[in-house]
Length: 180
Image (cartoon, rainbow, N blue to C red; front, top):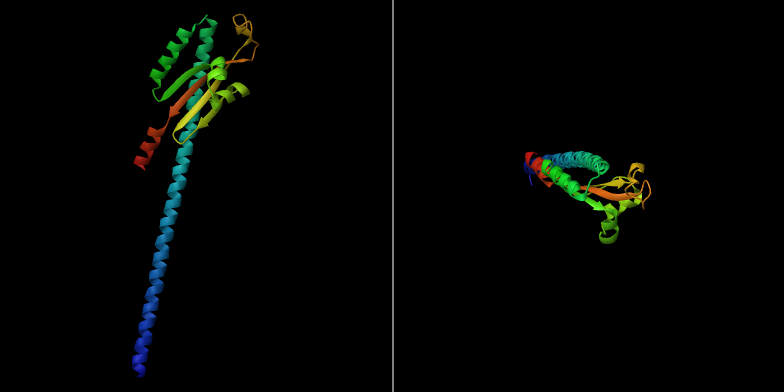
């Protein structure tokens, strides 16, 4: 083989190797760029979901506290269960994404295997639980000194009921994902 053919063959191999390295570097750059974009997207999405979750927990807690305060005022006026149920229905009309329920301690202990409600009774302070799309919040209704006149067989501080607030955030999360 003449030297010119050898040189051409060698140059050809060098160009092919050069193109292969360039192609490899380009493919690796594209791959890492795509992975970086994906990681940033996942981190931002996770941060948004956490923000929505925390905001919803605060909203649920505020609604439970407002419901508790109103029930307490109704109790002081000699309330009855029909007035409480009417108030809860009114609250739900004002806040349609929230479901509000009042559970008596007796009902929870006898009929409900619900861990959130049981924890709220057991620990005597607000509890929350969340899934991917729902936030649940339990607020204990504790007997106060001023209540003992009507609740003679119970002691101050005893939990009489739990206000449960459920908030479905699936629409909010879906809307955010559609905008993103």
